[in-house]
Image 1 (cartoon, rainbow, N blue to C red):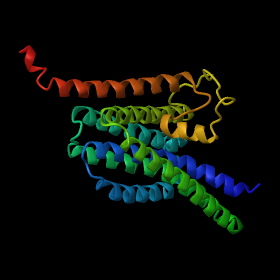
Image 2 (image 1 turned 30 degrees about the vertical axis):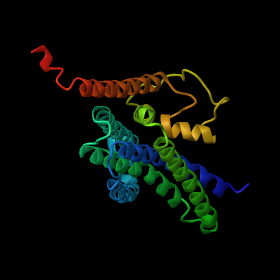
Image 3 (image 1 turned 90 degrees about the vertical axis):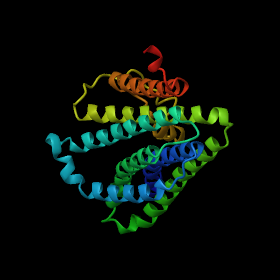
Image 4 (image 1 turned 180 degrees about the vertical axis):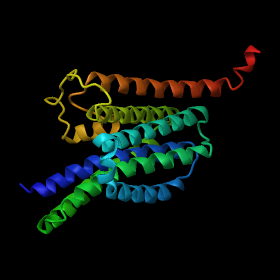
Length: 267
């Protein structure tokens, strides 16, 4: 079995899937709202630069907060992306078909933050093979294969969303953003538990026999929902709260659109 090749495919696929699906959803959301994707090239370049800088600083960052800086910074990036997605959800629900200028900024910063985190993981993994030149060809091939599958999934999701009937497309996109945002909190809570900032408890269930995390469906669900086969109570509770807050934001945005002068009606 070609271990470096398989490992590279799985590692790169796992990380690329997360931001590729996010890019696909945000591009579809922008297209539905009449916003061009001019923000994407700059966001991708800034994200790659951030990933490189983050990877190079990983040793120093890991020493922060008594040795749990890596976990806390990653959790912070996940929570930041969630907050930005809440803003996007609110705008899409409040202004369907016409995205304000803030949409591009929110989407761009979300992409930069996601690529900074996921890209640094890929670069860190690849850098571990510097002393093994014989493994480099398999490593690069695996990275290309994993990246190709991940980006293809993002492109497929984009075209699926663009192909939906107009009456469904907006709400399906908002629901996917809400699920992705909840997945961010799932991953963030797991990191906070690792850092002992949240208490650790026994898992509520174990679904690894039905859906292993390292399977392709498991990887996709991890990218979309932060899927974990053995989640603890804090992870489940914060994920559910994040999903509820995202749906509440969408509901509030819709109410403001339908009742733009609702507050004045009570004067």
